[in-house]
Length: 158
Image (cartoon, rainbow, N blue to C red; front, side):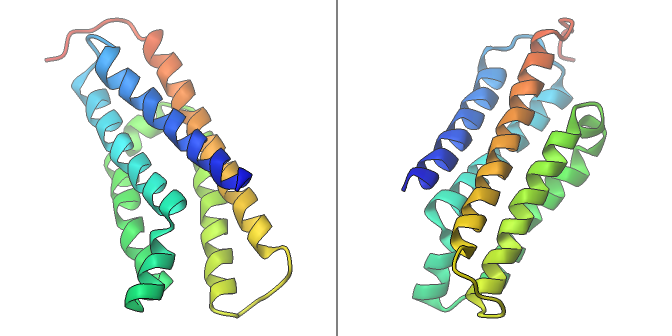
């Protein structure tokens, strides 16, 4: 239960950081506003998947395989990364890459253990720790981005 709370808190803090940047930062360029809005959507999707565990609900109640759920959910992530690749490259994107890597490792472990391909006693703990590492780095990335926006020279949006 404590591990669940940590992931939730990290993702809620990330959501609040992005909302703060969107609502209270004046005069940031339109491209950064679009990036932040897209980041907010992606973070909310991440919150929905990790905290509510949509993939388990869909598998148990509707017999939709986890692989299909994860594939569909990955589409907005891929779109976000592709659409904002130039903005991402201007930032400390290494944090984001590690974040996505940890989350991807947790997904792979989840798929392998749910499919009974591999099984070991601490797989759930490892999966949770990977998700916490991923969401923690996700939050650090947006914390860093918010600081950079604070130091950003005020430029009028045109």
